[in-house]
Length: 616
Image 1 (cartoon, one colour):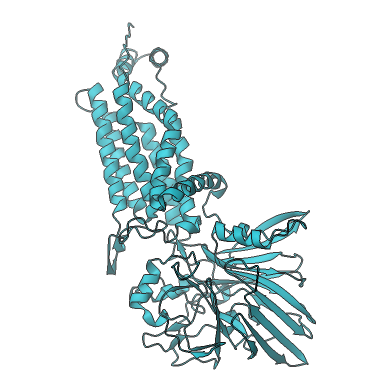
Image 2 (image 1 turned 90 degrees about the horizontal axis):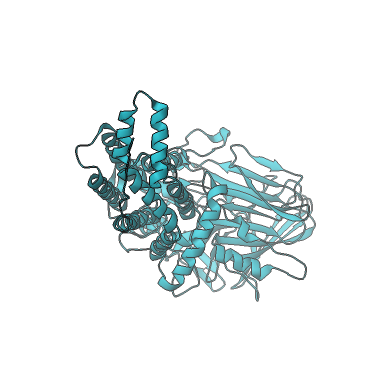
């Protein structure tokens, strides 16, 4: 293994190591508000403390659970992909864990509820992904931690009306209307509905009428549940606005203190956990501005905190929630379109096409609410989009994202074949002339300049180039980083299974078998793919040493011993580093290395040793 290849691998390892060890990890506290930064105990209570009634509207894409406390949505549950509905949400390991081990917190809805047909019991267990954080129940089904009503989705907050009780004035299969009277002859009416006719997936409408003063009243998005993307917690807050006639997407840094803006006019706001989110799109004029705030993870705990809680694998205080708000106006009816679902490119594009008005030049541009995750996304994003474009073509034929990654690797190897061949040729020629280079250095060891001139002449004579061999390797790096960021940013790959029972989610590490007690570094599951990757790297090194030995027979010199040691270190580093990386990335790099060995073998058999002469 030549120095340039080792340094290339070292650079990659450093890059991914920095992202893994210094990026926003799942156990890292991410910007909690200063005033609530101290760890709070999760209090217990024996029964619901809001005395609210719950109502449900449901279609093929969403189960909306409303509370009379706030006249707001307390749950948005997305059905898993099945033959019964049109949902694109896939079940992942967290969902299976709740269905098997934490059943009391896997009811949808959480509490008995009403529909247009009458009162219903909450007998449905599993089958849904909870988009919003919910109350935490004990194993007996009693309330352990109530979710505060002020953080319900689409609750109106301000002037102390967050806990206001509403009455249901109308309820049908596709709509529900809440109304409440406030002091000072003020009245609020809220109507949620699945529109008839033109409707995009995961969308519904909200109409709000405020009679009287609406100053200091805000409409909130709610708090999305935690999604771990490659082990990291990556919430994203965005808004869209028009600037000089052009659409501009602004991404907010997750706040440690409340952010209030009063001079901008957002076209919409987006609150996302990475793969899922909520978009509030005002269809009528509202007051200018927006607000964003963080909420302590102990105030609005994630459901993940229940998994192996005794070992504190996902402690609540490490995962703060975030909410965005839009200001409201009084004495008029305000209409909003709500998207609440997966930030899948196809789904958001369908929504854009559904609601666009090409005659007026209007496009809601919901697709831009997606976030591309990565430290150097401005570099890796074009490569990632190109890779995913190819993967989608392969998926049409294979119907497997895992096989699509393998086919993608083959295509990239073919595309980069000339550069890789160039690299192998250069490497082979450098190995072949190594004895001549060493002889020249010995002959002119007292005249380094002359030695350098003679070596350069030898390079020209044999066509060897010590620098160009590294260039093709560097060309491959953007594709590797692009694949890494692609797996952190593409909803289609979330929950995509390759080998059921082993590789069930390409955006998460493979799981050959698991146990309960967490072990240092290993965690609670054994990942096989990184070990296979290390084995392939070891075989590649042995093969390279064998090829080198055919040219330079005899014991290893100090430089070769150093190269071998560095190669062994890199095998260990990559195995450790890739252990917690997504299985899709392991499949990509594993396939690439196997194909690289194959190409190296072919090139070595094709190349003929040049006749070398050094009459110096």
